[in-house]
Every structure is written in C-alpha cells, then in structure tokens.
Length: 208
Image (tube, rainbow, N blue to C red; front, side, top):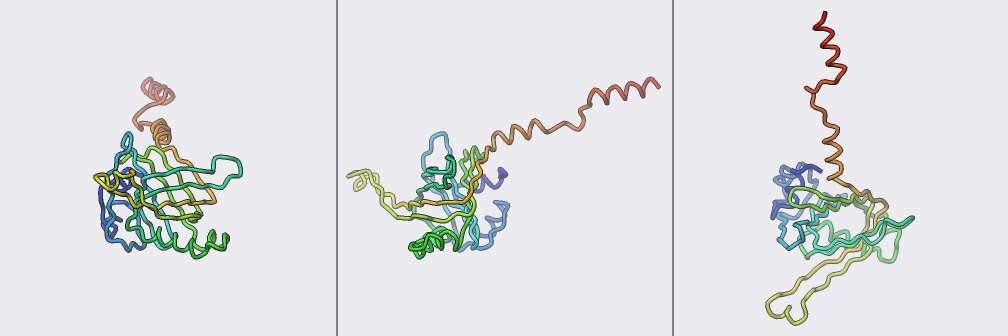
C-alpha cells in the first residue's frame, strides 16, 4: 500500500465521496456516508489501527480502537480476529452485521451469503508498520456495549458506546512492509553504476 493512500486513511477527517477517491488513489463504488471522521485517541508510539473493508457493495475505511487476533497461527485453525470500535457511520459494515443476525440459525448461509475481504493496517502516521490481509470473511458475532470507568463515567470521564465484532475468514496473509522496503532498496541498482566487466571493456576500447 502506498504512502499516499495510508496518509489519507490516518488523516483526522476526510470526505467519503469523489474527493476521497482522489486522495486515496482507489475507486469507491458506492459510499452512502457523506463524511467519515477519525477522533484522535492515545496509542503508544502513535500506532493506529485502520480496517479497509472491501464489500460487494463498496469499500469502507473504518478506524478501529481494539484489534486482537484470536486464531489462525496454529495448524488447521480458522482465521479469526476480534475488533472493537466506537459506534459510527459505517453502513456497509453494519449491514453485514445485520445479515449475520438474519442467518444466525444457518452457519453455512452466514458464511456464504455475502463474504468480504478486509485489510488491517497498523500505521504510524503515513507509514504502515504491519498489515494483515484477510479474504472471504463473515461476521460471526456482533454486539453493542457501553464502557465506563465505574462511577467516574457518571462524572467527568463519560461513557463510550462501542461495537464488538468477531470476524472469521477463510485465508489470511501477514504483510511486513518494513522488510519489503529494505529488500526493495537492496534491489535498486544505480543505472550509472558500472560493473567490473564494463570497466574492463572500456579499458580495452581505449587501448585499441
């Protein structure tokens, strides 16, 4: 993923219309939300979590506050992760949660009805430090809860209304952008650099 796209993802706010497509460098097939706003929360070392969902209905960029991989690194395990986010304007994601509820009595229908892909980006500013590409996913569990710090929620700290998702996918690819950048830099050769063979050929031409 290029820096330009990542910069747009981690911006404080951006308009999810044609202007977003121009900034992000990709095509949005359909977005019903006119504006997507990222509230600034404190993350250690400034690492923020963004989920780039690719639904059949369109693409949706979702700021995430908590991301946890629960299964997938063991042999024959399904690829499962949980995420928690502040309730916001994410119509496509919520639509898939509603569909999962409708098919709650049929696990096969829930899995096969409308699968989607998602890329989880862990980035500091415009630079992606780690990412995970999940494909053929469905929402297995969903709930809304209110977080509070005991009685302090009623005084000065307030409340947080969040959505909890448990998402299962058929495949997952871990990505290491920092390592890839190192390998790319090693493979870049200066076109003006001459090899020893080139130097020898030049010397022979001069002698002639």
